[in-house]
Amino acid sequence: MAKKNTVKVQQVGSPIGRNKDQRATLVGLGLNKMNRVSELEDTPSVRGMISKVQHLVEIVE
Image 1 (cartoon, helix red, strand yellow):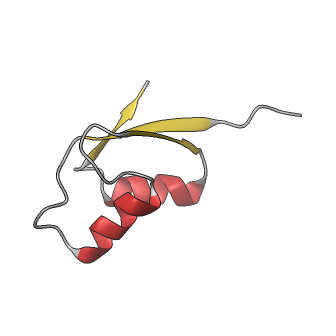
Image 2: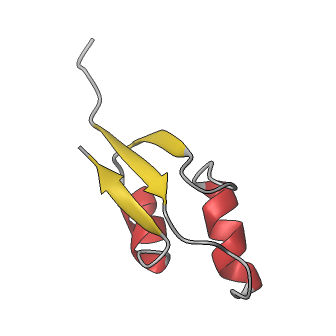
């Protein structure tokens, strides 16, 4: 079986004072606390979610 590409995302910004949809996007990415890291499958939908909250997350190498 082929190895699937993954992307690691770390939350670096607080969702306090943000829109409900940005908070929901963080939860959808598996992030809800500062400095939490989530490893996700690299798909266009996940990339879109990351770009929606790009000011709150960073991609970890």
